[in-house]
Length: 335
Image 1: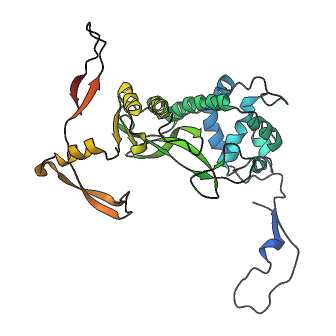
Image 2: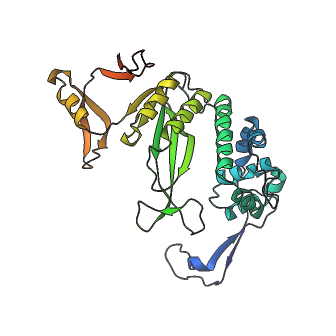
C-alpha cells in the first residue's frame, strides 16, 4: 500500500540509541494517495459470495420502502454496499467512505455515498426492520448451502437465546435509552445464535426492544423464528434451545414442542421446584465435571464440579370441554 505521511513538524531526534517516533500523535496524519491501489481487496471474494447467495435479489424482493421521501427507497439493493462497509470495519454512516478510495469504484458497482446511505437507513420503520429480518433469514439459508457455515448441523445444533446490552453514544441514536446501567445510553436487543459442536455461533435472528422490557416479552414468537431459521440453515438433526430462567415460561416451551426441538432452560426456584429437588433420592445424583469452571450465578464463585439428577416430568394438556361443561387435565409423562 502506498500513502503519504504528513506532519506539522520535521524535528528529528539525534544521538538516540534506538529508533523512536519524532512527532506527537496529534501532529501526524496518514493520507491514501494512489488511485490504483486498494486497501480492502478481501472484499472481492466476500461480495462475490454474497452475490452467489442472492443477497441483492433478496433485498429487492423483501425490502419495500414505500411512502418514503427524498428517494430513500430507490435502488434498495444498491444499498447492499452497507454490508461491504461493515465487513471492512465501518461502524457508522460516515465510515462508509472507506468504500470510495483508490480503485474501489472500479472493483464494485453501485457504491453509494454515505449521505445517500444515511437517508436510506433513517427511512426505516419497525416494519421495514422486519423486512430485513426476512432477508437475513433467507440469506443465511443460502449461505449455509454455499459454504461450510455450520458443519455437523445435520446431527446436532444449539440455538442459544439471550438478551444483551450495547452502549451507544449520541442523543439522536434511535432506540437508545438510559436503563439498567446508570448514566449509559444502551440498546437492548434479544439475540438468537446457532452453533454446532464443530462451528462457531452465527446470528439467527435479532429483535430490538425497549431497555426496560422484560426478556420474556415476545420470546415465544422470537424462539419460533430462531428455530425455523435453524432449519433453513441446514440444522436437520437434533436442535436444542438453550436459555436462562428469564425465558422459562409456557409460551417458550410450547414453541419448542411445536418445532420438534429439545430445550435446556434454567428455571427459577419456587416452592414446587424446591420440593421436587428435595424429593430426589441421594443415589440418583450423578457427579459431572465441567471442561472449564463456570461461575455461580449467586456468588460468582467458579464451580468445576456439580451434581445432576434426572426425574420424571409432566406436561398438562387441556382437552375440549366435556359434556358436563368441565375442563379436565390429562397428565401424560414426558421427558
